[in-house]
Image (cartoon, rainbow, N blue to C red):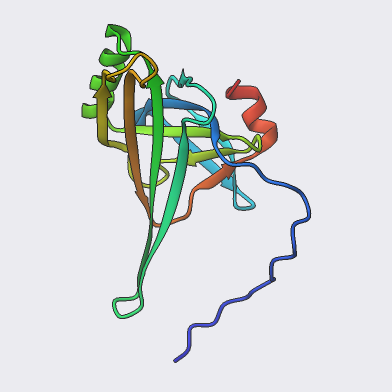
Length: 167
């Protein structure tokens, strides 16, 4: 028996697109619920989202499609990489909390689109470094990777809702 799908195709996009992310908002996963309508998140309820800011061109996310045809399994792994300049106590405390907590993450990309991570399982801190640098011009600060595994690709948050909650 064949697995049938309905495809609509993808038209050529003539608009430009730029890489990178501009900001991330993070909240404890246990208090957050989302509503999905028309394949977009239309509402995010609960939780206290805190904004994490960083210098431009230092953050990104990559979603990998993991498909095993033999087992019939597909899931999506996303790594969100953030870099925070300068080692200092306040940042160390926040990163230490991320290391033990289950969170959800909203990311604003450089195209002004908002993406939600942690839809069906919490996001966790999977890696990080604290660097001093050697020379005066070297990086001093923290690099962290937040990881999400999900049965769905990351959902975009509707622009209308994002404008009310993530500013």
